[in-house]
Length: 301
Image (cartoon, rainbow, N blue to C red; front, side):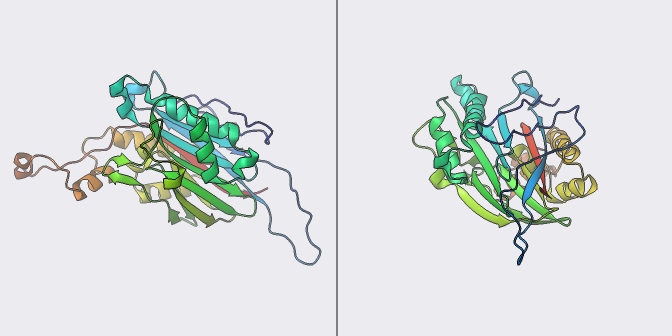
């Protein structure tokens, strides 16, 4: 079951994207006005923006509340995208883990064009985190495209981003973890991480590149070759995001699937009890989780 996606507005920015919904087939495009005149001597590089599709499928046990992931997409400047994954452990303290991630994304959307942010992912993560008052914690990844083709990425935790060019993954973020299955996270508690602990990357992109961003529910359950296959076979970003989310959700429920999560767990020493090993068994299966996917294609404005 897919989450109905609401439209989010950014104050004083260009109109926000209409996020992809399960009943929409066409991708939406980030639009903005050109602010430079071409030089007669040296033509300027064409300005770039993003054509974006999104899809989210909640954990089967969290369908009623829509899951604990949150995200936003903005058409401000070249385009801004972010995903936050609420840490489910807060439910043990009777705290709804979705409240923190949703408020964090709402604040990021509201502050994306703030002068103090300076179109910098670190400053935006910091200001959005500071403005969030809900109890809880969340991992976050945020990407901002400069119109000249520079993608700036900030990441805290194990949400991820992969950049594809001509059917190959040419860049991928690296998860930040204290130990296996315990990622870095922004929190309402002072002892957790801040934007200073984030991993930052700057990547040059070009027309035709495809960005795949998502919560760990995507990357724990879908291999790189599956991502490449789906993205290269389906040019429509709305269709690609839907298919990736559905594959991740299906794998997460398959107890026999040799998922990326199961392979990493075994590599880190987590496996079935010894008596099961003696019977030839091993730890398998996907990781049941919320799945959020954003697929963005770099296009000329």
